[in-house]
Image 1: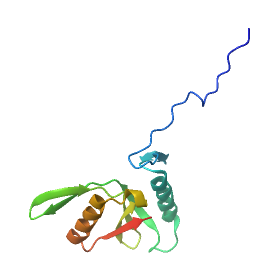
Image 2 (image 1 turned 90 degrees about the vertical axis):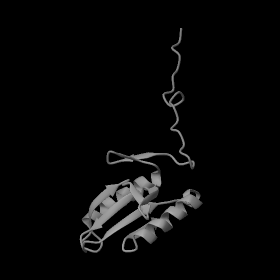
Image 3 (image 1 turned 135 degrees about the horizontal axis):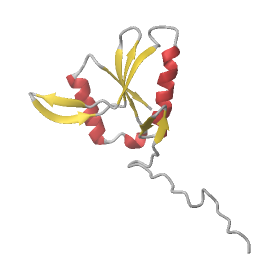
Image 4 (image 1 turned 135 degrees about the vertical axis):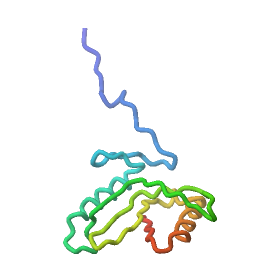
Length: 126
């Protein structure tokens, strides 16, 4: 009697889609909410080797919680994807976004962040 054939991928569980139809991805031991975010993390790692201090990344912090407090009351929290420190001392917040994830709620949080911390650079990576 012949052995039954088994295709390893046919029975494998497909990765679950995220809230906005994205798939999570792992890069360098970290799991990111999207492939686009993982690719940007790889780009930041490459920027650690840049020659010029204004382009060279020295520190990458991921998914930091920032409480947005107005008049002593916490209004909400925003969690930018990266806080990036450059060799020239500059610090920037980077948020990787796709058009589908730019909700009204996110726009309000971003504007509140920029109003509360006008000296901070909040960059949206499309």
